[in-house]
Length: 280
Ligand code: C2E
Ligand code: MG
Ligand code: MG
Ligand code: MG
Image (cartoon, rainbow, N blue to C red; front, side, top):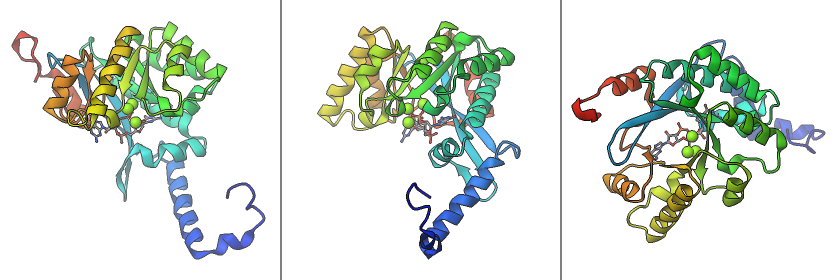
């Protein structure tokens, strides 16, 4: 229970509360066993150059393949994993799995892995990440780590120390969901991110919504001027791809290209190369 209601035992017997707490307790118990039971899976969503269509890499997105609930999306269990102290172990599993998988791809393709801000507050994170990458055999420059902008904790020296160490080792650092946080612009001064991922919420109403068009134009220019790779997330239509191309975006990611798919499917996608460098 939350602070302050610990002494109020009657709350505990409220039927609605009881059922909600019971469900959470079940999920928590199951989540604690998720690694031992091998129920986590990584899916991969490809990223392409909006002008040529060439593949540039993929983002690893974790799912919980629950025996009764089916594929549980990350938004439904990552916050709980953070709360109960499991995010470190889950994050290490995703990193190890994604780096190992990327070793099967052509060596000009990169893999992106999401980091929880809580992982960044661990003093040992950089050393742990570097050990996992090294053990996988993946070249560090092929790995990108994505940090969701809305969740970065300001003024945390451990966080920025980890980011600097990882970047110095050749790993690229991306700001994910750009534009959704409280202090988007100040983060860009605090750390030299390698990539800016423009959040899907700004992309989804392009080209009809003139304000969205203006925002994405300005953010793409900002990213370019700061020397960052710019990615448009959530590209679902051909018009949005064309817009990304004319705005000089380096990469697109979204359902237009592919939904996140299992490892075997992304491997097949990446291995299909047509003549003249065109990719299916
Ligand atoms: P994200 O990193 O911004 O990932 C993109 C999300 O948008 C994915 O949802 C993806 O399936 C979805 N998406 C991609 N293209 C489109 C599109 O064209 N249209 C629409 N409507 N959606 C699209 P997913 O896989 O459910 O992941 C949700 C979030 O969970 C991720 O957002 C990321 O913040 C977090 N997450 C995923 N995997 C991990 C992980 O391994 N560790 C941590 N800490 N967080 C993770
Ligand atoms: Mg991401
Ligand atoms: Mg994102
Ligand atoms: Mg997101």
